[in-house]
Figure (cartoon, rainbow, N blue to C red):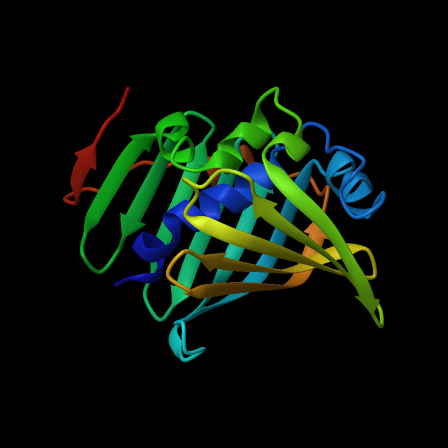
Length: 212
C-alpha cells in the first residue's frame, strides 16, 4: 500500500500535536511546551520508515513538509512515489500522481478518527494522553505519549528533540507496526507562501470524496 494512504491517520494525529495553541506544562517539563508554544510555521525534509511487528522495514519514503498553524499543512512525498497531502484548514486533499486520483475530505472528519484531534480543541492534553518524560540521551530529549482511550489506532508516540528542536517521531499502532519520521533541514517560523496550502486538482484527474 502506498505510504500516504497507509499513514494518513498517523500524519493527522501528529499534525494535531503541532496545531496546539498551547501545550500543557506536564509535557516533558517545559521543553515540549516551549517548542510548540513558540511554533508558528515549520518546514523540513523528512525520511519515513514503516516497520512491521518483526521490526522489518516495509516502506521507505522521503519528501518535504510545510506546516502553518493553525490547521494548514503540506506533505510532499518525492520517493518512491510522488504523492501529496494538503490541508487548507478546511479540507484534506490526498493526491496520488501515478494513479491520477485525488481524494478530498473535510479535515475535521479525518482528524476525528483519532483522539489526537482533541488536542486541537479545548480539552487539556493530559485528559487524552499519559505523558512520560524520558531520560536525556546525550543532546537528545524525549517524551513518551500514550493515549488513554482504547479506541485509538495509536498505542504510543515517542517524540525526539535534538538541541530542543523536534527531530523525530516514532509511532506504534495496535498491530505492532512502527512508523518513524526523521526530520532534517528544519526551519521554524519563517514566513511561508499561502499558495503552499491551496490545492487545485490537475486537469484530467479523478476527484473523489466529500467537499462539505
